[in-house]
Amino acid sequence: MRPLLEAEGLRHRVGGFGLEVARFQVFPGEILAVLGPSGSGKTTLLRLLSGLLPLQAGRVEGGLRAYLPQNPPLLRRSVLENAAFGLYLKGVPRKEARKRAEALLSRVGLKDKARQPAHLLSGGEAVRLALARTLLVEPEVLLLDEPTASLDPGNTAQIEALLREAAGEGRGVVLATHDLFQARRLAHRVLFLYLGEAVEEAPAERFFQAPKDPRSRAFLEGRL
Ligand SMILES: Nc1ncnc2c1ncn2[C@@H]1O[C@H](COP(=O)(O)OP(=O)(O)OP(=O)(O)O)[C@@H](O)[C@H]1O
Image 1 (cartoon, helix red, strand yellow):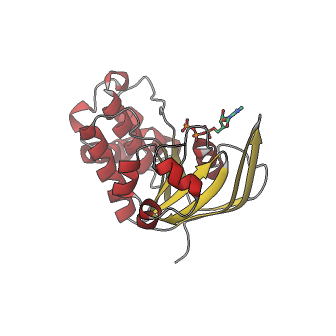
Image 2 (cartoon, rainbow, N blue to C red):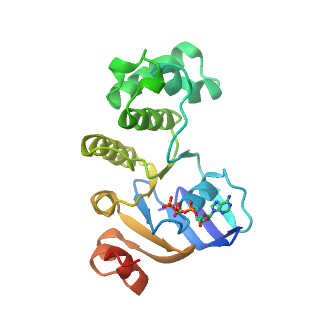
Image 3 (cartoon, protein in one colour):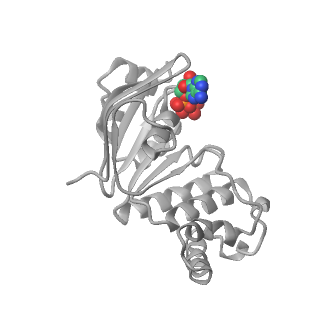
């Protein structure tokens, strides 16, 4: 199977920090969890893969990617206008864009709030809106930076269901998370970063049951 996104020879230096990832791939229908302690380079990797951070070395190839940052910015407009915004940028006519945005807002449980100002949404609703906006532009790969970091179990479950659906549609999902339970629930594969190094990459089940690298083991046992 051909990867939807492929990177090779990534090296990135900023301040005293250096990230090095020799090879990175994500396949259709796959959820890949990027794990690692705070400061290990998860956000940096996602931003490099998204194209937001210029490459210092290596290459990234693949189809349309959408990056969802940790605190996605919302426009001071209605929920519906926020959802439709990406389509406006793509030149989709306003009426058509609104229709498609409304359909997606129903899917993420925000239909009733479509006319409300987006800044009045709760944290969980705001993440669902940001995810709806991201999904509307039909990306092949979703790059998500801790999308459920501050959410309650109900909102987390809703987001996780949307991510499974996105993978079920054949998209690739790259998920940076600190929630090991979430990674166990969702991920097919895991990439473990430590101090900017891609320490271990493995099928999720194998990684959680029998991590090979002592640093992976220490991380899973809460010793890093
Ligand atoms: N613009 C920058 N200037 C200086 N240092 C930076 C910059 N951006 C990132 N860093 C450093 O790079 C390292 C990796 O940061 P990054 O945000 O990628 O880690 P992370 O694994 O996503 O962390 P967290 O889990 O806390 O979100 C950190 O030490 C951070 O301070």
